[in-house]
Length: 532
Ligand SMILES: Cc1cc2nc3c(=O)[nH]c(=O)nc-3n(C[C@H](O)[C@H](O)[C@H](O)COP(=O)(O)OP(=O)(O)OC[C@H]3O[C@@H](n4cnc5c(N)ncnc54)[C@H](O)[C@@H]3O)c2cc1C
Image 1: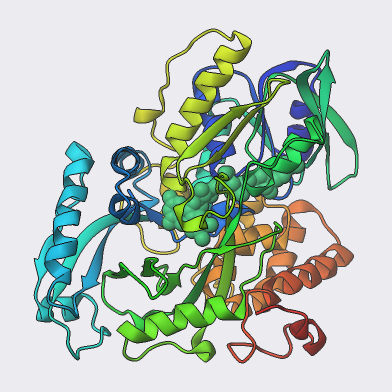
Image 2: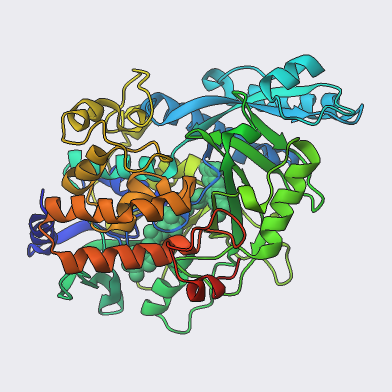
């Protein structure tokens, strides 16, 4: 469907059963849940699907070993159940991954080993593989760059790994398969009220500047760290419910963790966990937890966060990556629900929260990617009750997501599942976008034709993951991406130039000074205003 047709569908004079604001994990999960229960659904996303936190995760489908350590057993059990369902329903996007906890102290293997046995048990029938003790030789086989001095073996446990923004796009396609309508680059600018009740929203098509209204029986606010902005549209005096915190990751070459396993550091110097995870033939290392006073769509890593990650990695890896080895650095904001004044953000709720406003708007936030389905199911049940929609059973536990297949396709095709064949039939299926990126030109065409990609950033950041894998290479690839998109979308040379410029400004925020920076990508002036 072309964008014009989509806008037409979104602006038909009708009252939707549910209007969902925000196209991240929470909004897309809710929309798929609602559409598969047979409700009519419109989803509006201000920028692009997964533009917010949902493209900036650690890429784990997990129960959360850390929450187990905090004694939050029910949260872990629920997440482990969802982990198993997601692997079953989207096998093209989720894979089992072994995590090594290296033991350098005599007590650490038994200490963590017991906790991880409980982790296995809590997963029940849907457990992946059982955790076990490993000796030094096996630890080094699984993670050959682990520091050898003092290494006494460790534990190997299993969790899931996924591609976060590809799951978002897969949910978008699943939503469309079930009759839902979703529009990106379509910010909600205000709520429509009638007799004190929220009955819809005003929104703008950011490509034409045209404004529209959408009427709905119930409005769901799933705008991540922006939920308080939406709540203020209803009541400017409302107290904020979030206390956002930032998490940063750096991405380095695979040679820093060349085995098949990830590394988990259960306790860093500041009491957090740190992961080093192989992902699309690179390694993602993170994360941090830094309370932030303000939210933005492009949060920036602080120098001390990057130093902390590299410093902690250097305690375990040899060779250890330095700033010069960082291919990309990205920051995401956690929508943590506020507790009492002065509470440490590490201790705030990671569980999801549903709040109903005086005007009947449902806000869904918190939680994590792994539990998106459960969050969506809870939100739809509450929303339907709230406005008296007919009760309908949830079908998503057993719902295969768009493209689901067990075929083990090679990179970069695996994430498309059953769509891969059609993409491979497009021009440019074997023409790489850049020698240092795994992506093909045909993927750009597909993204523009089928996946609502509207900007160069949509393609390089969220349809492919070029921005996160190698920010400089992605900036180099921008002109070619713009040219292919212009062909597909009927755009001119001025559009291409504007797109390339805008993309390079975004990409500059993912490069470290002194790292893999090429002077022709962004001007020195722009480099200096970066915060990293
Ligand atoms: C550093 C970090 C690492 C994480 N790692 C993991 C992990 O490994 N595994 C895991 O399970 N979870 C992980 N999480 C948690 C998970 O990523 C989040 O819980 C989840 O992505 C939140 O999704 P969301 O839809 O609520 O918010 P978002 O993804 O931020 O989506 C909100 C959307 O609303 C849109 N929006 C805002 N305002 C408007 C408006 N006015 N009109 C229309 N749209 C609007 C935004 O553009 C955005 O796309 C991690 C989180 C962080 C921060």
